[in-house]
Image (tube, rainbow, N blue to C red; front, side, top):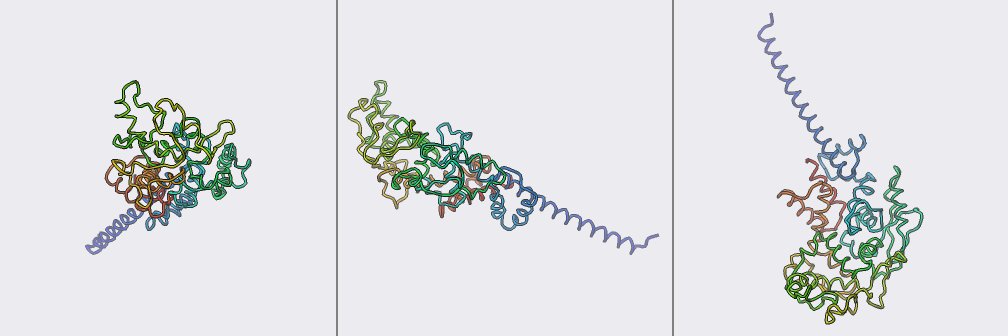
Length: 392
């Protein structure tokens, strides 16, 4: 029969066993949680499951440095060829369709993210990215090079570093001063400079890079002295429609869209055209609609939105608010608070698969926006968003 001392010893040993089992269970649960978080980071950033070795390397650092785990996930080529590609593709067409062939606009975004180029240059840089060794060569009149590059991206051995920088001026023949980043890519020109009055380029730049459409910037208090001749001052015979509606957009948009006065897209040649010597005739379409309206003399622009309700866009006090041509307009737009907030919100939504919905989400977006404005490194915003959303 066991003695009291023997029974007490058994009880102590059993308790130690239980405590040890609970500790091991806690460690296992923590490791399992970290593996799930690492898996979620990789899935959100690369769009494909990680290999066991990659997952192990992410788990090894996620506890002490979760951003390092995100960096490992972004080493997967699919981060560029799928995630960033699908992120930027809707910006390149009027339908905001993600299912479009790869083009120079989308590839420009991929390259800038990959190389850590300040994203505030997206609307002003003399920059283009091309596929090294991809045939046919890039052309100002064809998208064939980028369609071939997209086919190469589907190969398992594709190296994102084969996407290399060059210049629009060297590749497309535009004067360096006439280059304006994404706005003067062939894809953007085909979508927004073709026909029309070039107002589409301004509107979709707001949509794609400022996260606002014309309804959000309407201001009927602005002086309408730069509204062009093609806008009726009494639509349907009622001047109140112009005073209460049309003026709200055109009084601010027309003096800004004047920056594009020398551009068009030629559907015959299939390329962007720039003529520094004259304003394109499209700026005088329907000039008898209101003959006393503004006649565009050149590509000088003025930002009337620096005052009034649209001052909330957060225009840079270091810029003059006026200039000539698309490049300086792009610098004006990309220096705003709204531009930075827009890029961060778009990345947050793409990575977290939802819009910011509550105060913690909004606080996170504000923190990332502040960080983003230090160097405009969009790749880091992808990493920060994935780490924030790794738990849900």
